[in-house]
Length: 161
Image (cartoon, rainbow, N blue to C red):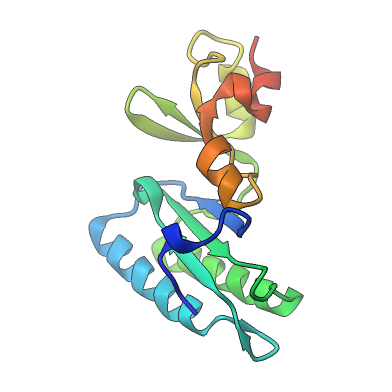
C-alpha cells in the first residue's frame, strides 16, 4: 500500500539510494511511475506493505516502510534491490554502490568515490562545515534530522583534517 511519504511515521525504515548523477525530467517521471507500481504491489508473504518514496534533489531514491504495520521479509527486500538494479541498468547510473559519498559544493551535489572524498577531506575543499548526505540513516526520523548535515555531525568527520 503506497501512501504519501510525509504520512509515514518517523520510526519507519528507510533505504536511500544515491544516484551517480541527476535524473533528467523524463527519467524522474519514469522512475516515479516504476516506484509507484512496485510499491503499490510490494508485499511480504502475500501481506501488503505500507510504503512511500520520494526523490529528493532529483538525485536520490528514498523508500520508506512502516514496519509496525508489516515488516519486510528477506525475499521482499531482495525484490526491492532487484528493482533498484533494473533502474541502474535502464538509466545507466549507480544507485547501489555504498563506497561513494555525496556532499554539497556550493549549490551542487557531488557524487564522489570514498577514496577521492578522503583525499579531498585533507584539502581546503572539504571542511567540517561541508554539508554531507549520511545515506546510512535507518529510519525516517533520522532521515529528517541526520541525513543532510555538516560533516562534523556525521561519520564523514573522521576523514577531515
